[in-house]
Amino acid sequence: MKIDANSLPDDPEQLKQMLLELQQAVAEKDRELAQKDDLITEQAQQINQLIERYELAKRKQFGKSSEKLPGAGETFNEAEEILDEADKALLVEVDDKPATPVKRQPKRKPLPKELPRKVITIDLSTDEQVCGCCRSKLHKIGETRSEKLEFVPAHIKVIETIRPKYACQQCEQSGTTTQVKIAPMPPAPIPKGIATASLLSQLITGKYQYGLPLYRQEQIFNDYGISLSRQTMSDWLIRCSELLAPLYDELKTHLLKQGVIHADETPLKVINEEKSTSYMWIYCCGEDKPSSNKMRNIVLFDYQNSRAAQCPISFLNGYTNYLQVDGYIAYEKTSAILAGCIAHARRKFIEAKTAQGKSKTGKADVILSLIGKLYGIEANIKTKSVAEKYQARQEKSNPLIDKIHQWVKENKEKIPPKSKLGEAITYWHNQAHKLETYLSDGRINIDNNRAERAVKPFVIGRKNWLFSNTARGATASAILYSFIETARANGLLVDSYLQTCLDELAKKPDSLEYLLPWNIKQG
Image (cartoon, rainbow, N blue to C red):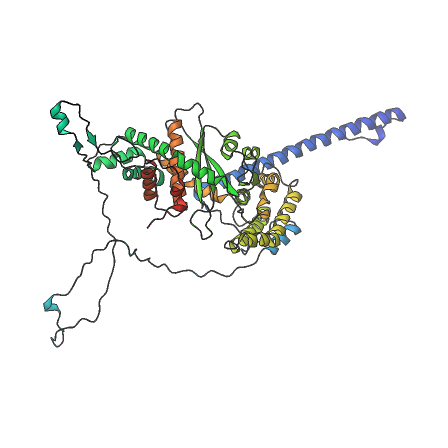
């Protein structure tokens, strides 16, 4: 508003009124400008969020799936302006260059000595065993050996069981009813069926270990001239799971006695279920493969038609020790002491770093550097005892966790919560009490990767057979997957272990202790 000084009135009341109107006009203008600034800021945040999602989508489509950390020892580009002095100091603090690893030369492994061998000798003919110079007879000075691997296709055979019948000839002659005696059939996994334990174990490993759906196995048997329908094989697998159920319960009893259990869940499509999506829950302990410390390596799958908290509550049945999980809220309803997964938190900061674009260093690098240092400590104490792990974590890992907590607290209000970095900060802030639990006990892992690796074979197999028809079939799959993965975790030959279990359970033994995987000796 432009005012001419010569046109101002002399009356003070009129001047006062003009001043009030001028103040209102200025205030209105300020409000309009503030609204425009807010709109511009909101639009800028939305644009940044879209750019972040574009960068993540581009990485998923064309980039590497690896979550390799910047970690301790990796150098960084020049910091962006968003890094304050504290951030830069943290980056410098963890930027210790490790020794450059020596690249190993690839070397072919020798073939196992226990494999059957067919020796072929290729020698010179008698005419060629003479010297090309003086024509004298050559003498043997040594030999060279090479090995090639030959595959012999599987063969199928029929086991024909003959049981002679006996009757009393004297009773027959006297007209007395005679009793016919015959030896009883040996116990079989499926009584009166044509499938032996070896055939059943082959079907189970084919589908659940190697991801061969039953319709493909049906085609394979057709190539051998055997007609086995997928419906028949499906019924066999369900009956095998019911036979293995008592041993599954025995494994569950041992699992719930462990100090630390890992848990996870993954969706499963079941056609004849009320809900569109069901879930396969997984509970495991120990390690992925046999270790020298005689840990109980158990992997159990549990089918449920929901993702409700009642599922882990029912399975764990009052379990009060450590339960290592991701951030899913249902686990908080259990009685267990929850330990978080730093790998999940790290994954969100990796997404934030990806959204920064290439050749940029931002705030996400600060946390990724500290997390990389934590994983470096874990790598160095991997073979240590429980007490030594606890001590090392208290001395080295605890200060790093405190730095991450402090950084998250200081930056939580500075970063837009809907950005990828804001989501990562919020996740860490909400899970902080669980993410530091692993410091309190050397038995706990830094992350829940044990469960994620155990569920991976199921996820891969699901891409082949896609779905289950019924809840009964999904429950059977849970039991059979449990035996596959538990056998593998204990270093057993899966096919042989399943065959042993099916044969022995058909006999209805009083005790199942001798069939537990750590009590089985193979080879």
